[in-house]
Amino acid sequence: MWNRIWLYVYFTWFHPMLKWVLRRATGKCELLRICCNSYTKTGHKTKDIENALKTSKLRTFQRMVVDDDLNISEAIKYTMSIKDISPKIYPEFSSTLKASLRQISGYSSLVRDIEALKKEKYSSANQSHEKSLQKLWDLMMPNTKLDQRITKQWGELGFQGDDPATDFRGMGILGLDNLVFFAENYNGEARQTMIHSQHPTLWYSYAIVGINLTSLVYDLLKDGLLREHFYYTITGEPAIYHFHRIYCQVFTEFDRFWFAEKPKSVMEFGSVRDKFEKKVVGLLMKNDNAILHNNYTGMS
Amino acid sequence: MPYFLDLLRKLKHKHQRELRVLLLGLDNAGKTTILKSLSKEGHENISPTRGFNIKSLKNKEWNLNVWDIGGQRKIRPYWRNYFENTDVLIYVVDSSDRTRFEETGEELNELLEEEKLQRVPVLVFANKQDLVGAASASDLSDGDALNLQSIRDRPWQIQACSALSGEGLEDGLTWVVKTINSKK
Image (cartoon, rainbow over all chains, first blue to last red; front, side):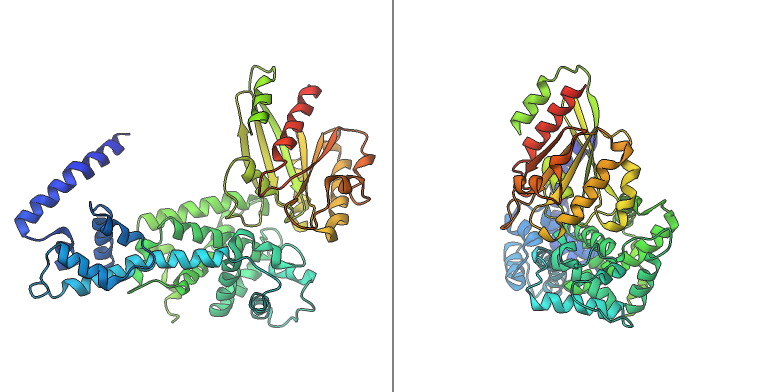
């Protein structure tokens, strides 16, 4: 309650006043101050620019944060004219703002692209979906041939029944793409994780848990919790590839977490998953990227 | 669902009663979607259930604690851990998947033979009526696979529904509450 009142007072009174005083004192607007400041990490700069845009009184600035198809050069032109910034006096302004806007609007574009993959339902009539599914099998089970398309063998990969088509549910093709990316780019880790999942007492279903983790990472993205992580770790726009990579890290981390928790059975999945999510969110909020550690950054 | 809520309010009980409802059925029958639909949540983000979900559907007098338990064959052995003190069993069938009618019938009949579920009223939701080719509720109840007509030891009901549109769910729950009310 007090917290909300304080935030209200801060944003409607103190913050604009502070901006006004600083503008008078330095002769620079907020965006210009941020862009001319020498930050230790570029991600911080982007974060500050994002906040400045979000709290701006101008709709056009607010929209720059959520626009998933932002025309960046137009946005820079607009900013420089409205804020009256001379390129001769501040030559670095436009390039700095450009770098940050690419990160900021790139995130919104990524949300849009990931959403589209999630909405694409798995269809057995779609040849590319079918190929992808076969590919998943071949990568995960290089020594066993899949006898036929509909078979109990899918159970070995951790699907529910004899046809994985019904298991992707609300995660659509995104769920399958995540699993294939993990199997293709970190084959050793993926197969190791699958072997772990077949533990006699602590077993879980590899593919089904994988699809549940797609849902978890999707929620993180949608809630904007990956924004800062991307600002600090990627120059330019984040791509679908980066989403997949976080997924792989989250999956490996979940596997570790699951065995450390020693659940009585797979029926405890829900509570372990929730606990795991809290941990990941906590680390992302603290901006401590330990959980998304660097095991995977070696890959390019 | 105004009618269902009215009915709940009319019930005589002064104190809120806890009811334990078990939601079972094969994988991909639509159990979680039904639960989400009943609690007015979106169902765009569902993944297959590992373990279980619990939701409380509350009003003044009743608190339905609905246990939605994963339906995959591999986790069906765990179903029995949740049988104790069940007031009502809701069994969900994918009416469009004819290839699995036999399997779903076998599971249901096994459940009905469980000692801990003796005399527990059973509501069968004939789900996915929105799909072309879905079997009707009467086809299912008269067919050999489910064999509902032979149930003699408990109240039972089959209700056609679509978890996606929400159609039929309210009628099903209305039956549940009525049945329990007449029992107590």
